[in-house]
Amino acid sequence: MLTFGPIPSRRLGRSLGINNIPPKICTYSCVYCQIGKTFNMKVQPQVFYSPFLILKEVQNKVKKSKEKGEPIDYLTFVPDGEPTLDINLGQEIQLIKSLGIKIAVISNASLIDKKQVRENLKEADLVSLKVDSVEEEIWRKVNHPNRSLHLKSILEGILEFAGTFKGKIITETMLIKNINDNSQHIKRVADFLAQLKPSRSYLSLPIRPPAERWVQTPSEEVVNQSYYIFKEKVDQVECLIGYEGNAFAFTGEVEEDILSITSVHPMREEALKDFLKRAKSDWSTILKLINKGQLVETEYEGNKFYIRKFPK
Ligand code: SF4
Image 1 (cartoon, rainbow, N blue to C red):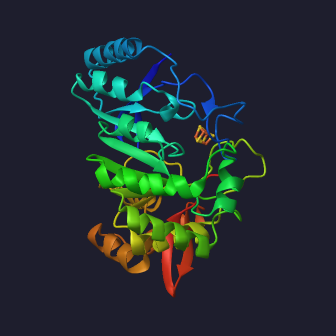
Image 2: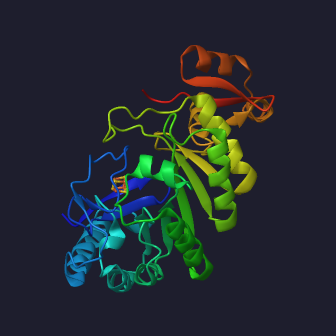
C-alpha cells in the first residue's frame, strides 16, 4: 500500500499518507521508533517505486476520498522509514502538485546536508525536521544514526535549507527521560531552533511502544519546563502528548476544553483562572480533574502550571 488515510493529524489537519519507502528502511534506528529497530539501514538515496505509480495511487485515493466527502488538507510523505532516501522524491512532489493539495514531508533531516536532498524537498509546502539533540553524543544515543552521518553537518544542512526554502518548516523533538531531557540540553536545542526560526516546534513523547524497552517518558514537570524553555526562543510551541482532537475548540464543555488545551499547552494558573471565568466555572473544576488523575499541577520558575496527565 503506497497510500493510507486520510487520517487526523494534529500537525497537518486531515492528512493522506504516502508511503514512498518499503518498510523499514531508515538512516536512523531511534530508540523510541514505534515500528521497531532498523535492520535495513541505508544512507544513499535510491529508486524504490516509479514516481508515476505513486502519482496513480495518490490520484485514486484522492478521488475516493472526494467521493466519500472526506476532506484532505495535506498529502504527506510519511513512510515507515526516511522519505528522503527516495531519490525520486522531488519528481513525485512535482507530479502530485498537479492535484492542487498541499504537500508535506516528515523527515528525520539526516540527509539534508546533501544538495540533492534539499533540491528534492524544495517544492513541498511543509517540511517537518527532527531535532532530538544538538550534541553528537546524545544524538547517537537517541537516534542510533548510521556511522557515516555527522550531526554538525546535518545541523548546518538544516540551516542552509531554511535559508532558501519557501514553504513552512516545523520541527519535532522527542523527549526521552534521562537521555535528552535535562534543562541544559533543552536550552541548547532551543538555541538552535532560535537560529532556525521554524513556523512551529513540537515536543513529543514516546507514548507508543518504543523499539528499546528501557525508553521512558519524562515527567509532566520536565515536559512543562521544556515547553517553557522552548517558548523563550520559538514563537509557536506545542506538545504532542498523545491526544488527538479538538485542541482550542470551545465546545462549551469546560472540562473537555481544559483537557484538550493542556494536552498541547501547559497553562499557567492565571490563564486557567481567566479561562474558568470566561467559561462561567470555578477552581473546583480543576480540583476535580486533579483528583480524577487527568490533570497535574507542576511548578516552573516560581509559577504554577497545569498539564494533562500523560497516558502510561
Ligand atoms: S527516523 Fe523515524 S522511522 Fe527512522 S528510526 Fe527514527 S523514528 Fe523510526
